[in-house]
Image 1 (cartoon, rainbow, N blue to C red):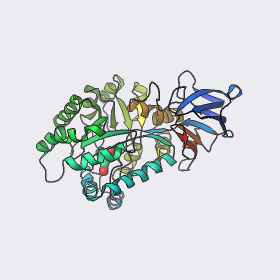
Image 2: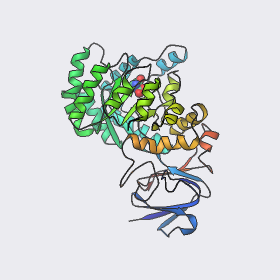
Image 3: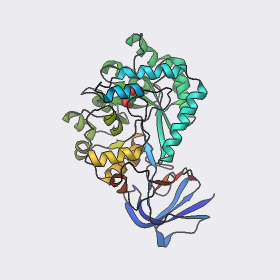
Image 4: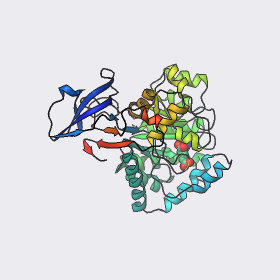
Length: 386
Ligand code: NIG
């Protein structure tokens, strides 16, 4: 197996509690794994050496929430929103129509283009969802196309009741025929539990059906107002509840007492003119927080995890360390990929060799220099991709 030693690391964020943040460090990658981490003076010899000349190194971003199997564009909706029109779940139907009309090749190419855009910015592990097909055939092909590219695929047949359909019969399909059709391609199921999408009872049916088929659970909740999403997610032991923009004290306490990660999507909060999610309250209460891009054509059309980190620091009261952890190890926890051989979101022996080198001496520059493209090099599964 080929090995690479990365030397001259000015600041190495490992996300390993035993190693912490190292200065003057080195890292050895062997095959798809990290083989050694430690002080530069003790670094072993490897087949290749890459000297990063004092730059900062961190685990690749783990983007645990995207919706990238889509076609079409919603610029007009965005412009209307910036002119004062509120964001509504109903906009999803516009993308559903465009997605159904696209060929498999067009959908796969659009997905690949966005994934490659994410990788160029340091994302090395990415989840994506169905949810713009909303019938058996289109959800199944969305899942198939996603599984060819994404690290994790989530079934979101319960994204919206398609216009003209009855909610109860649509939920029957989501829990029955549609679920069976996507099953070979997905690990997770999700439901958009919100006014204008699915109510608590309908959401519960979806989660129960998915659980019975052995899928892990995720929930979109508390995005556009207070509601039952967070408590539903916690009650069902979901790996993550995503958005969490409107939280009561009971919601925060429930998350803090659970294993459910609160995945915050600051780019979405900004793009939909919602308040920013209460990240500081969650962390102070003891909840686990992840940051993700929510890349999608409606509510958050960005793949930039660096933007999310900068926003979390500049606007949400997180320290740089907390924000970087949430966008790497937090995402890994939300996807239950944070432990064992090949874990992501950390740089320790045995972890996946997913490495992000910044063209900066410290991770602080992610917030200190917001909007500046700081990605200098990326290894994904031990292969240099940037
Ligand atoms: O996470 N909340 C629901 N789904 C997406 C929005 C999708 C869209 O507007 O197209 C989200 O924000």
